[in-house]
Length: 386
Image 1 (tube, rainbow, N blue to C red):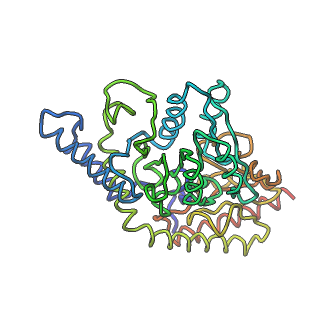
Image 2: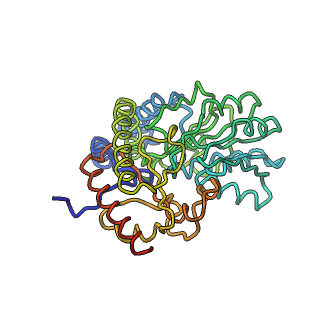
């Protein structure tokens, strides 16, 4: 018998905290608490050692240097520090920044705000119908001269994975600093900050089974940033304030576990995703799968039911299955997703879009039940709308 608790299939929005991570977080909230900036006693020393260990765990997962890690509240703050910090540092001229059309709202909104203020020149790189970028276009804008190139590692809606190593190589060829929002990718696919030549990288703990409210910006030491906040001088003065010790420890532990388990977990997740996709397409063959199906996140299934509004589906399943109509940062909006618009999908596809996110705690029983519920609801809505 199925529990009354909804089947959770919205792992792109946030992940549950791994119980092993939660155990560590609780310990550092209670009997192992401390301020890592307190240098006058052993409690502060213990906290500082824990922060250093977390840095090492993160560094080993993404191949960066521990000293390059700046802890933040999450990828949105990291992106703001990277973009605004770069613009402020280069304010003697108007910096040229290029972004893809399908970046997260944290990148889009920050850049558009700066552009509106006349503080940057913004170039938006188009994508094709699968959300792929054209590497030749990226090379052309880099050749023309840029102060920052921003391309995500994997799309948070349709799951398309981008060739970050190749993009970083293009940026390096033209001495263009490269910011990669890797919040959807870290812990799911390999990311190599050092060897790929990434300049700035944003990550969030709550996308890889760590707590919400903790993240990091990884920064090459030769890339200068102006801080957005002042006071205290912590973290090289770039992000002052008392460190979130429990969150940092949780992020470090989650990275350690992802390094050990990522390959096996993501293979299993992809198999469950494929099972769900096949199950739905067998019953409802008109379902469209969006994004690059040969290069997408293992847990991503972004579908569209033409001529059926996604709101009609969500209204009928919201107490049974947790899925979304798009990015969590845009939930509640009535306009179509900027990602789907950039892909130039037909209006009837955008109106019927649903994002399904599968994770390591999703079971085959969850998949089977969700497939049954979704198929029945979609068929019922089709009958009522036709």
